[in-house]
Length: 65
Image (cartoon, rainbow, N blue to C red; front, side):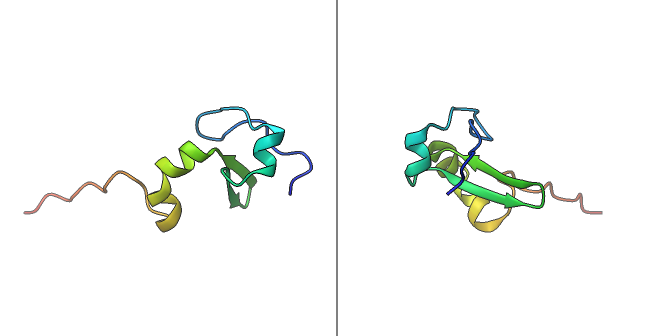
């Protein structure tokens, strides 16, 4: 567990409290730049992106000839 956790959700900027640090609702996102934390509601909202690593918006289709 982090000793100095970030104080806010990386998505909605809700505060991350000491109680949140001990709980399981928040998810961590590990990148080269470091670890960011996302609250439970934002984690659930972006579950597809988290599980697949794909963006939520579909890619635009190319026009056919």
